[in-house]
Length: 549
Image (cartoon, rainbow, N blue to C red; front, side):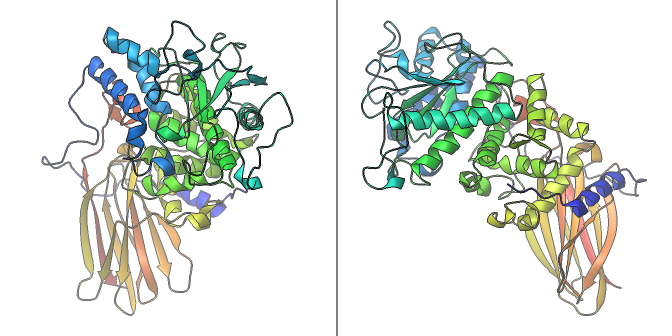
């Protein structure tokens, strides 16, 4: 895809970095009110066994076909299988002995039933996909082996070619669909390797092939509401690499997967899930939002014409800017891909098909940094900061069509509030809270004639706690122009802008680019590093006043 350099805004970002270092204004830093609600994610501590049992229950529900009918988004978006299985593998050692056996069955490969005497028995319609007859000879090529059995799991019609059409294939020894799966995963694997990513970790001949090959299993997943997943059948102890195997659906029929064509669903699933297998080679226990956000980003980088990832934008920072970008839940983790698109287009240096910046983050994660540390470290290498880039991210998101290469297809991030100012009511005072890695956008509309100025006084987070702001002025008949607000070290700043009859509106984006967390290291994956954000629950303010000018 074509990437824009956006040099004018690059200058704005440099200006922000400089202005943030200006001599402090006089002002008082916003302080937390004693009555503030608890920080996001704050909860009573759970024991390791409780965490493990919750992970087990989550996977049991995930692999219950009856539960699919009660999930309104299951067919459109699919269930979150990969990281649910990862969480179970990470906590399996803390389960009671009888439940460890249940976890082992849920983490088993499809071939661990009929092909593995003494292993886990197939249990009909419940539990993980399970071959009930011995598999055929796998199709092994390049970095992977595709496993299948005769019958429904073996091949599928291709509705793109009309009734009775088949998936393309050239080898009479294998069903066409098996070949198509091998082709799709080969394209994806080669793309990631060419882009400089590590290959997935070897599994030591599990699956019956060479240790350097990833096993991909074809099975019926539609009944579970799952598009595909990659998992590890090894216990994960702490952070580090782990091998992965992958499972994809046997036909991606429209009845089970109504969005996109079967071929397109297979392609984006292969790109997304294989990227999880790559991530496992760096750190299988990395922060979930980072894993899902970058995997969703990667699928569109490889297959940018399919655009399945756009369906998640309403749930992430573009659709809900006041929500932290690292939130887990309600599909937010998938919507966070737009942050990595922003960084990839701001820093478009690429290797192969992919911007280098995201790979640098994963290399740092593999070296022991958690997600936000890896991101800020990669930005430091580029001589920029999260404060600067998150302010830029907020600015782009209000007018995506002007900045993102595919932004014409993105809905602008919404305003948090719109306020009319008039000669009789020329001022507005707003007091609010910002979560970490989030923004709130406010618009002020002049309802007066003649020349006026809008004085904007900000009392935001300390700079070290991520305080930043962008002001945009829209004059009549002209394109919006962004101005950077100079903040002192305690997050205070005062500035003035054109207002009155010649102006349509003025917008203020208040930003918290906080990257500070406490109590890291738990198995509560709701937030970065399994900890709690440090700088939430702080009251901040924007005070505007129109004066004749």
